[in-house]
Image (cartoon, rainbow, N blue to C red; front, side, top):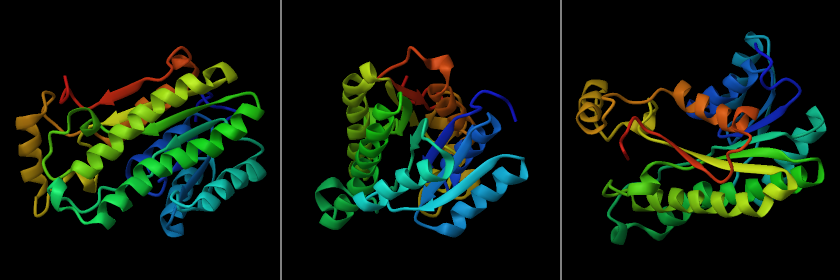
Length: 253
């Protein structure tokens, strides 16, 4: 454990696995008290256990970020348990069922936007409300490099939802920085999670595809995305406002 985030309370949505879990661990290793939120208690408890095994402090809140009442309760519970909210990583997201844009079912489009875009908006809404009234804070939203280029046929809903997060982040950043709430986004590229695989791919298939497509020649690791998020959330990035940090091995360069 280090002192980078000592005295801070950090909330991570989608904290039960993958990038969310790794970021929660990284915040805790920096001294933060961490709250992980998501829909599956067992997954969240797995993250809490990992943090506690390393000597950190964490707790779990079951919440569906598409439900306003859940999001309000998530923030309220964080503050009640730990005395404040200083950092939020709005990471919860889904891919949805891929398909050509004109052939997507209405419910697929709606579900992807409900989690990826509305979920970020609702989370920011309640986080900002608390932070404005309590001396400020830092928010990092999870976007995606596909929101910049859209070069993956069949991923129109996901790309559009993440592009919307990027624009929402920039707008909100300008709205609230004067009140001490600093907002940015991170846009990962292909990362070593289940989302990096196409249907039927083996690890070898995926790695060969990535080597051919990404300048750095490999997938990213969740640790690398978590490090970027925690940098944006730290005082080291205190002059960074309304930025969407692309972390994708040069794929969008």
